Image 1 (cartoon, rainbow, N blue to C red):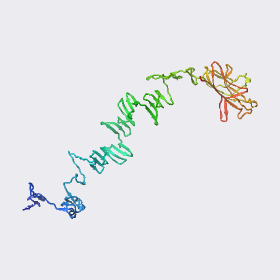
Image 2 (cartoon, helix red, strand yellow):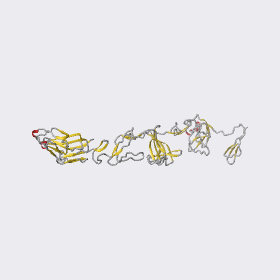
Image 3 (cartoon, rainbow, N blue to C red):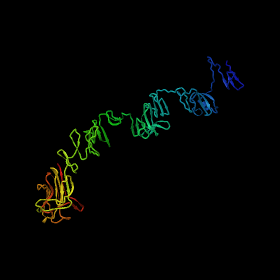
Length: 525
């Protein structure tokens, strides 16, 4: 027979199973210990979800046990009832709220209703998994690939230890201390990594700075303070720049106060401008300018300009000789350096340098022009000897001072036996031409020693009997030839004719006038 013991104390406390209740309602188990099979506890009212939804004017903190959720729907005050279990009525939300100590984020979903802080203390928090997207935040914002030990930001399929996936034209990585920022950027097919603030970007190995890019754009290798677009700092006696394709190497070297730039392999070094090779240094040491196949130590294919002294001779450590004024450079044959040599003859003479009998000399040269017209008498009045042309006394060149010219004659000598070039140009005129018959003047070089022509030109001169506009008819005679001449003879420029002929010193016309008659003698050999 069961006996119910209910005790009411003067403190308005009710005790069930105890005569000394310690709270408003104190229920004491009949068998608090031991192995009794009797049931002890409180049996809370059991209702289904439809009944919990239908209740009205429910007092806050009312406790029920929902034993069936197949009835009713999770709406209104029953919107939180989604599983069998204990629920209490929350007066602040007017909804049945689940009363459960068995909520487990590892086997049930849930919603965070406020900020939460996990205090680890000395404890660790570890996650282990084997899935590709084992842990993720907001889809692909952060993904941990536990199967391949990778982390993805912006992707759930990272393919490296850290993969950052962003839209085009946007930043990815950002490391900052608040005032200095290191960022990565991808946009328009270009990848950038560097500072987005006015700070240098430095690269280190073994915790030592090895390369630097300043905010001004200078790059330093071996220095953090480059003073040019590329500055390479290396210890003395060491290489700096190295460009290679694996078999050919271009290097720079500084050591012992000497700077070197060139190949360290058996290859030529070539210099270009406008993408065209202009100078070459072969592996054999030959230098070519305008050629990539120099045949000698210095090979210039093109013109050469020397604006200061030219030294020849000497040796690897001694300067050669610059020569002295007036000397010329003489070849001494293959394998021997050229030497400076004095010119034979008169070094101070004006004229053309020629080689005679293996020596250089200034060729004798006479160039004379007329100062006024000269009229030559007929041969009948000169004893059949051609007239020496007078007024040839404007000496342009007479480098041996062997010419004499007067108003009525001229004479000259050559300084040495040889072959001489004769050039004579004269404009002739005459009015002594009865009945318009032709005349035949002779112009040339007369050997006064033997009284004979040694060079001459003649032609029919059709001088009309009626003067033409501007005066009598004129005809120009030209003689260009080369003849042997001897130093022991006297020569002269002469004109012979059966009639009176005038040699003109100017050619005149409506556009002006200028010298027309000129005689010259020049040694060739």
